[in-house]
Image 1: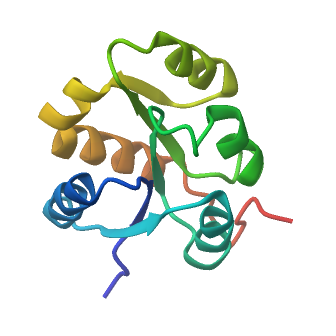
Image 2 (image 1 turned 180 degrees about the vertical axis):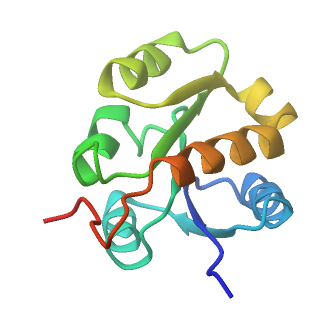
Image 3 (image 1 turned 30 degrees about the horizontal axis):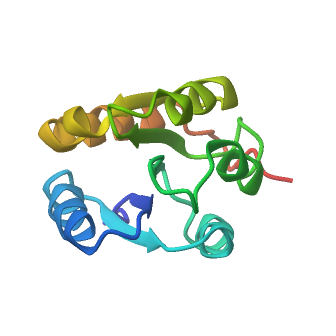
Length: 136
């Protein structure tokens, strides 16, 4: 039996967390919620998430700091950032920082399961083979 993939989520909104748990279950994944960048580092090291969700509207999670807290691009999880549609600056920074997908919060909420499924499929397709984790 294979382990379910882990989706890490940098969110502090409890209602959103509940919704993400349901979406993760729907795509056969486990959700690991991080309320800080320190928790993100710990989860990244211990659980090796395939996908990371980031609430770019939360000032506690600046896009560049999130990327800096993760392993190099070749070994880090897929990054999906979502932002309030009236705040384009966090979205622009996330795109420049190397996020794989950046969408308005409204689209994220309406297409959560489909977005998670697509990004998990992409993550599975780029997994290293022969035991090479891409990590030092």
